[in-house]
Image (cartoon, rainbow, N blue to C red; front, side, top):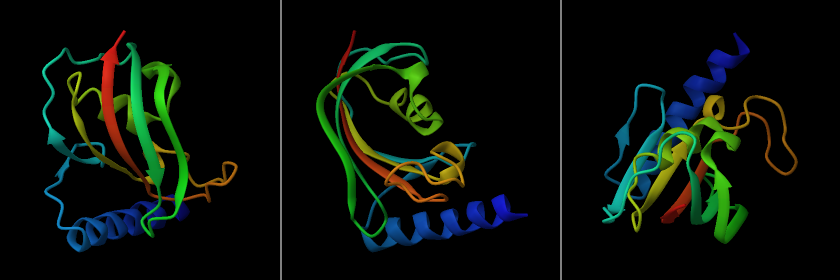
Length: 129
């Protein structure tokens, strides 16, 4: 029951954020919301691709929790929201991912990220390595 409440609250929080920021966002079957601002022209990564990415991570109250430039990682080693969401971009693409807790770190605290948090990432996919 606790998980359901988080999912429901996450959905409300994401919708409110989208409305307040006038985003044109799409929702996937998993519950991930995304908006692509720049399509990009390169190839798309797969779920096990190595990528180079710039990102800025924050909560719905705009409090930042992480950022990185030219970050290299394999998409099989990240949270489910990234594995799914980054595949929606082509190299050079830019946009935003709005990730509910069940696709992020779940209901348990993870370092500076409180359990049940919606995670928002501004991303630019630099390269599929």
